[in-house]
Length: 353
Image (cartoon, rainbow, N blue to C red):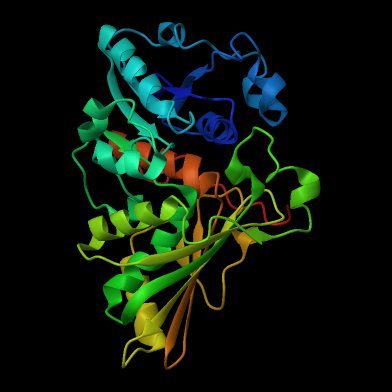
């Protein structure tokens, strides 16, 4: 414990915050320092997340002005933000200022959209508001861990959950040379992807036994996917994305379709994916098609490949709260501190949920 890194979570009362707390509780190199929330300050973590009672029974949420007192002056700090889009940037700015006042060596991983774009104008174009901390953008790097071999940035903006699932399927496909034209992507997400605050789209009577598309060809993850694919490969591509709300709580299932170039074969394409993810401990290129229950509550991604003389289909399945958010954030934090990338993330899927 004396050699582990104190760890704080901003915006700790949402679903992603709860998953971060769960993962931190079993991490061998990170130890809990603070769960930060003004609205829940003074309440026990167990009263909000009863499933975490064994790990945090008597631990309370702390306010944004108080959490820094839980970290010793001059120490290291792993800081996660699970705050909402638009709020996270200012919270991180204030947290970094507090960390500087105590001479902390800090790395930040943000799960919101606030640090997924390098330019303030790109953020405003997609989200319709000015960025809350444009001066911090240059200190953040955004990308799926499997597609970034190295970065000197001290902080990370984690891609969105849909973006993660799509990019893991699309980047090796685009690099293969077997694709002609645009990508056509259909994805289904569980209700936890809409956050903890109840709304019509996640209300159980509306979601149960139901499925529907939303924001077809207009979803805000599409430009993020295209930007990160170009960052990874240096090429432009068009992603025609249609997301769907599914009748389950956790998980994302994505289908990427494209026109096959002449000479495409399933064996050659599979080899491309196997080689691309040879050193990626959380990616499984499977025979047949992925299954959501094979990845739920884990940091794993399953990828399936199918081809015909004219078409390619790549499917991928992840847990939106783990690989798509909290788990991917911990994976990045491991890399920032030089820990084994799999630290705290080897728990298998729960299967029969």
